Length: 236
Ligand SMILES: O=C(O)CCCC[C@@H]1SC[C@@H]2NC(=O)N[C@@H]21
Image (tube, rainbow, N blue to C red; front, side, top):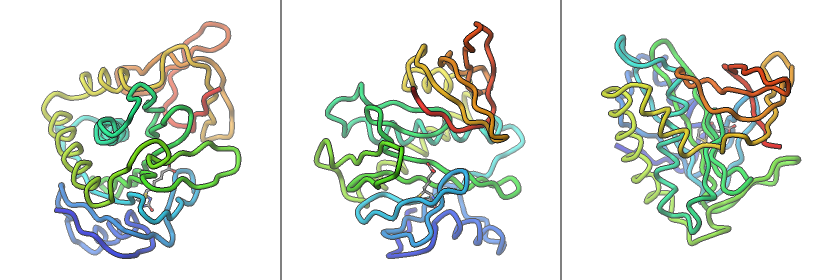
């Protein structure tokens, strides 16, 4: 079920508040805002409020036998990738960037923010359907820059279907096929990148894929391989 609201602060904050008020918020339920006055991005950044863009959140309740909760970042990325791919005039230009951005060419089209509350994970997704923000030092793009972009309602329906399908596969088949499919849709191996780690350190190297837990593998300049568990990646 998709609930549309004309305006709110942040759909992620709203679902977290409902969870802390004791509302279970069923899986498959989405809250989609036409405008957000306090959209949240990763690492404390704000998320641009673009009219005509998709801004919505859903919840996953992680069970005992589910794969690790952090792999939901990869799942969400793949769901958006699947929803956007049929709309792209040049499908090869659409690529996932670890952990959970979607790029069109070298510019950001979509961002995903996961916020946990107990065993529940709120997954917020922002897709620049109509308009891309102007962000200093970051390239951004909207789908409308390259094609006739769908409206928010239509896109919300197809994203919800893709997300449900990925969630079922994740529960049924586990991490291995998810990681394999993510790698096929992700940054090409050998691409130079810099990882801005949570402690402020910056590690440089080339992308060497993902390990079997979904961590980024960075090939360092001295040839060693390092698994990165968290960070912000920029492609060189
Ligand atoms: O920084 C990022 O790349 C993640 C951005 C996530 C934005 C979405 S828009 C819907 C949901 N509500 C929020 O406040 N943030 C997420």
